[in-house]
Each structure stands twice: as structure tokens, then as C-alpha cells.
Length: 249
Image (cartoon, rainbow, N blue to C red; front, side):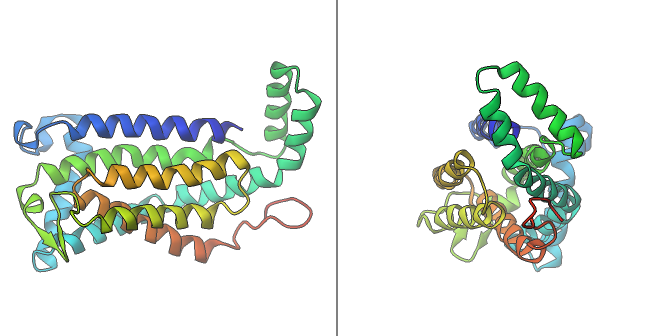
């Protein structure tokens, strides 16, 4: 219930922040430096330096540099992702009891919320923990956008058919971003409720239209992240399986 409400809100906040960031002319922004304040020092600058370092390591290939940084970021947030998976499976296991409470207290929302919280506490489930990876990635994505657009080398670099500082003129990358978003959500949400399944359909479409306007470098990061999540979901698919008794392993 809580995750169902928070995911669309988080997504809309992220889209609003990203849209605001996309209207900024990178040439009007100061050069990336740890002396520019908290945001640059702890978010933009580490990504900026990491991208340049890996590009130099990979013979000035920023497409591979984005891949390397993406893998590092995903490994760093892996503990949160595993916690999200555990929380998701635990919530699925509680669905029958939650539905009983919703039916029983359908005319008393306050009592319903109280009983829901008691249910979560009884089973040691935090309904908000599943949103942590989404919340963590919001500032990373925005910082990634600035690290890319404030880096002349990346904006002028190419990778495969892409100009990393510009949207994909052939629309291939936006399509791949949407497809991998759908596959990633499908793998982790096979037992989603109808509302979340609706989001699983809407979000890939939103990602497609957003990727049409974003620099290819940022869309590439999104695709890399989705592929990482798909592979990760494959290996973790049995870790917190819900058994026949309705409890998560």
C-alpha cells in the first residue's frame, strides 16, 4: 500500500528535477570542482573524475567509462537492492492478510492504517524500505546528468552510433531504455498487485519519451543499469522466494 503510493510520487519528483536540470545551459554552469559546495563536492565531482579516469583507462572511450561507473554504482547500492527485494517478497507474503484487513476495515481508514502497522510490526516488515534504491538513485541520476553535460570531453565523444552529448537521432537508445525498463520491472515484479502492474506499463513509456530528449550518455547509463538489474534479478530470483505457506524465505 505504502509502496504503491510512494513510487509514482518519487518518479514524478525525479522527472520534475530532471526536467529542471535539462533546461540549464551547461556552458552557463561553473566548472566542476569540489570547491563549489556540497552538491559538487560529494555528488557531481566524484562522478566527473571517475568518468574521465575510466575513459583514459579505456583509450578515451566514454561509453565504456559510463559502463564501468554504472557497475560500481550498482555494486555500492546492491545491499539496498537486496533489502528492497526482501521487503518486496515479504510484502507479497502478507498480501492475503492485508486484503482481509482492507475488507474488514474498508469503512474505517484510520483503523485500517493502525491494523496495517501492527501487521508490519508483527512480521518485522518496513513497507518503505523497498523505495530506498529509488530514492538513492534520484540524486545520482541528476548528478550524472550534470557530470556529463559539464564535461566537454563527454559531450563531444561518440560511442557506437551515438553522440554522447546529444539524444539518439535514430531513437534506438530510447527504445532500448524502455524495453530494458520493462524487462527489469517484469523480473522483479511478477507478483505485483494491479496498480503496480499498471506502473510497470506506464514507466517504460515515460522513460522512452524522456530518453528522446536526454543526452545519449545519460540514457546509456540507464540502459546499463537496467541490464545490471536484469542479470542481478536472475541470480537473486530464489533468494527470497515466497513459499506455499505465504512466507518469504
